[in-house]
Image (tube, rainbow, N blue to C red; front, top):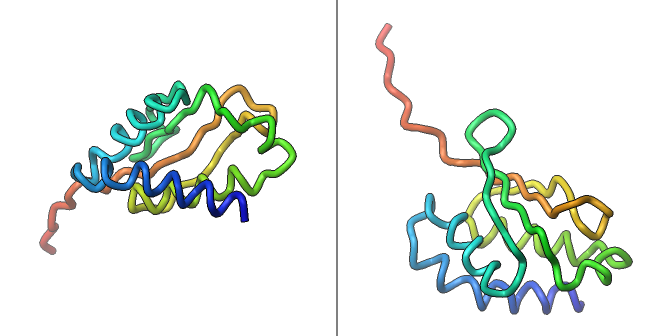
Length: 116
C-alpha cells in the first residue's frame, strides 16, 4: 500500500511536466524533475541498440527499499507509465549496486520502405 501511494504521488508530481513535452524529450524531463528532488539523475547511452539508461545516483528511500523492494518495482512501473514505454530496471542502490539504472528504449528511427 505504501509503495502504491508513493508512486501515485510521484506520478501526480511528475506527470504534468512530462505531458508538456514531446515523447522523445520525456526521459530528459524525467531526469530534470528527479534532480529537483535530489536524486542526482543522469542519462547515458544504452548498451547497444536504440536505448538510454536513466541513472539515479542518490535515492532518499534506498535504506527502506533494501528491505522492501516493492518500492523500486513500483517506481519502475511509474517510470514506464510516465515515459509511455516499457522500461527495465537493471540495478538499484537498494540492492547494493552503485547506482539505480533503468533501461529506456528509444523510438525506432523511421524505416525506409524497400521495394522488391
